[in-house]
Length: 117
Image (cartoon, rainbow, N blue to C red; front, side, top):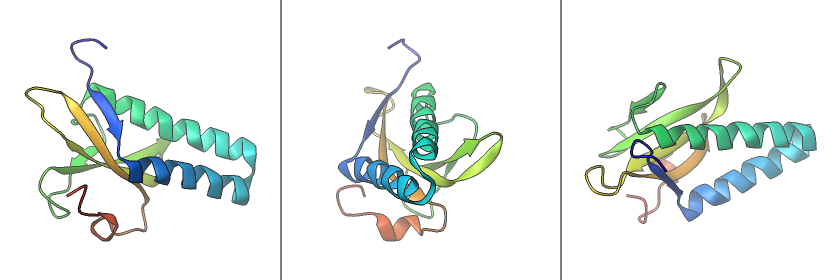
């Protein structure tokens, strides 16, 4: 990790979201598509290592203080999921906590539990 990298950690809910998205994609579109979409999700998570203000990330104060989202992109088009995240402690740890990975039709506030808030 370089001095400009941020650590990206996934909550247990975000890990479960990732697994569920890949399983659903496999059932609906096959294993090859699931691998491709899973890689797209992992690439977006990797991109967050550049920090919370990367291109495409936006503040979502209406969800709660400090929340931000990043839509997954594919071939210059938005995919159907977004990453909901927060900065844990920018001054000390430089940690981004991915709270959930949700379909863009979902209301993020309805999918937060007390542990993420």
